[in-house]
Length: 558
Image (cartoon, rainbow, N blue to C red; front, side, top):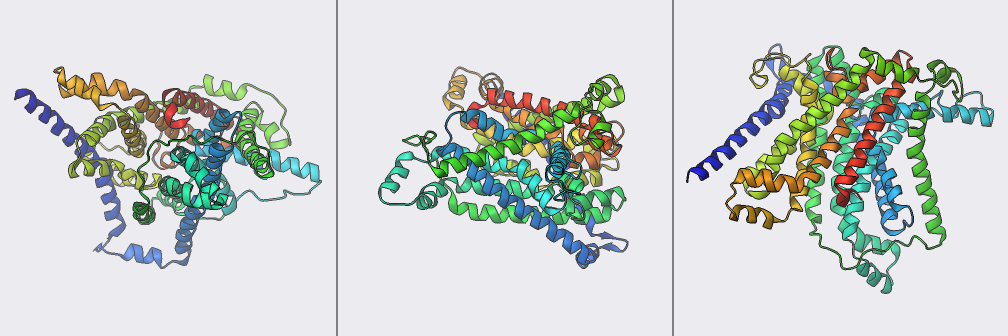
């Protein structure tokens, strides 16, 4: 009886802690922003929204944002689904290597990708200058900025969500069903429409939500190569920089409403396409050795895609060993130097941002796992409305773009708060890792739930039957068996946060300057070599993490 009471005491104490954190760092900050958006000198009203929405320039910013999200989702969907189909039905030799390369953009922080694309395709980029020289042109043959450039970069970095989700979903397509449809005279298009599409539709809809949310919240590409194309994410940062927090709050609420509305709309339609995947009876056999014009063209497209992935990485590595003067004056820089790396590792001021980013990312991973591992176990083990609500609260940041999370925290913690134990977090070190943790919760919770879904429940039952209490069963049986899935999710969060730029640009201070901010600052100060060296170090860390993910969670990622 006493043990049972202790078990319930521990569980309810945990619920209280989670509720405190969710209210203090997710719900209350959002309502602070909401209050800020509606507040005027005479009280609360819709005046701020009315003024903002009546301005044609601001309406154009909103339409630009929505259009950017829609186009990002469409282009990512076309490319991601096509690549997943190729890898499932046509890929032959070297499939694993190609798969790893296709996942690579997910492992490179967005700000590094944008910088590498600028060095390749910008006005003075290697590829651009090379074309000028070969074609004897007097000026660049294209302009790498504006809406097209933004979509190009976002597609390159975000198609991975479609590719990975659809690639996994295609594992549940039965080869015998395809063969039966073909034998009855169905065309390839009919097979795709009637056999393949119903299976992958839930994965496609989930990917649509993620890519649309990423598209409307993108900051690196619109800020660095947007030109005159203004979107809400860049305007939010500008409003905050000018200390117009009332305007920033209005923009944040609008961005959140757009994201939430699209997510709810897609989830509404996704209920019609719920499928219960079962193990297929016949494994799909890729026709890798088959020779046809279609297969040949597909391989050419895959080759171009791989070149598109590899070239920016090679360019940023190559240029990181060049003097900045050579980068700025030569078509193909050739003045080799180690000075860029020596500066970072020998000068404490240059080395500090790398340490800060690693430290803050590790803190976010640690805090996120402490919150989500017990929570995911309780959610999976104990069904009911309460645990469904708990999951909803922890998944709530999924609907909040990065700039929304940052502005919410600024509005809530720019003064002392009970949730910060009487402290003001703004300007201090911990506000950035707090923001990283909030955005990491949905990813970690989902990853832990996947790991728990593959756990043999007999292990837990055996432990309990031998007299182990809930605490010992959880720590000695559950956690060790799902550890690879937990660690894989943690590594993914590390990769996503170590080069994070949007929240960092809004929240960083003197004491927690991250590597992404240092990269941009050095670019603006014409220390391009140092900026690129930061990028190479970050890429190296991310690829080590990628190798660890494949080692820990082969089933999901291979």
